[in-house]
Length: 188
Image 1 (spheres, rainbow, N blue to C red):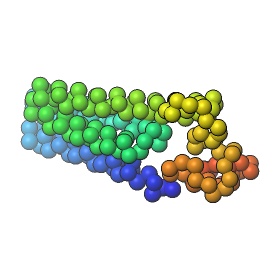
Image 2: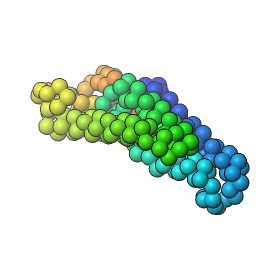
Image 3: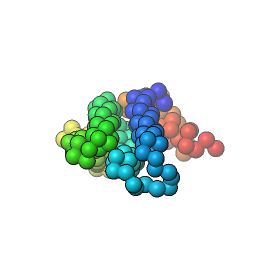
Image 4: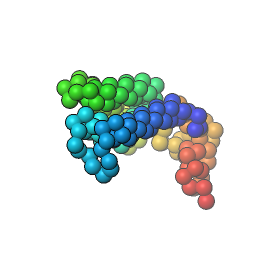
């Protein structure tokens, strides 16, 4: 089951490495422009590198949240591709802002657009899940479906039956059928 999350995990690791790279660039800029901590001003070139890092760090939690939600509830393959584009946009933003404040604008708009797309896909995926689970209607297919139309409606699934692209089912605590994730979250 965990292997099915590998593409999402790969992009997450790349995102963390990108943040680490940005942090290192701030350290190098401190040395190059002789800005001793805790100072964050004094040289315009340093300040641009510092702000590029800070801005990227501010958006990082939002990116990770909607990236994983969209990947789980909408489409993992599509979201991984979009996530890679976001990382590229953030890198171009950092590089551009480090050179000139004006060079940050195009990559900033690009990565903001990508982030809004991820927010939309995450929202659509969760909305689809909830309407399917509670109303028996899947808005992504625009039709009524008999349970289980979504991976969370497990009461109608027999043990071992695969109901989702990356979930295997096993008997749960109360005799119902739930994802194997329960064993990871509640091992006792």
